[in-house]
Length: 138
Image (cartoon, rainbow, N blue to C red; front, side, top):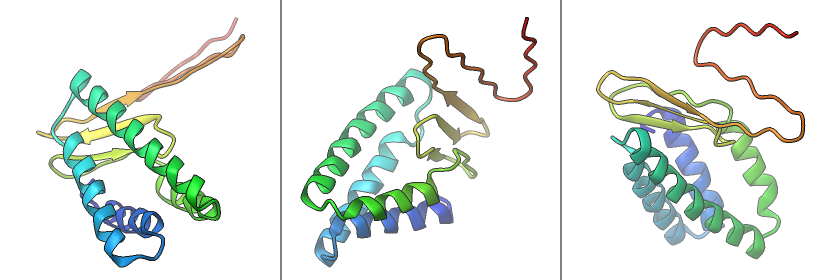
């Protein structure tokens, strides 16, 4: 989360969360930075646990926001559509989380880790691959 996209997303979400109050915007920026720090440098199960905790905290904050300011939904949708389309990261220790929480990419110590989640119900199927994939249906 050290890219220009992170800086833009952080400022956009901070504006949204502050609802036009400059003093609250700085608090939102600090919360977003703390979330980034909680995820930075973690891998595997530790990263998954930290991600789940951050996701829960931010779901609650955004839920409270939408309850208090229902008109914020449109702006939130724009932010998610703008910044939530991919989970790519570059640079040492950077982390990106896709807007739909379907993947996390981190590039710490020259490693790239991608974690994917999927859910299918009924007779649905899920096919995921980190690279090439061949599927032969019968």
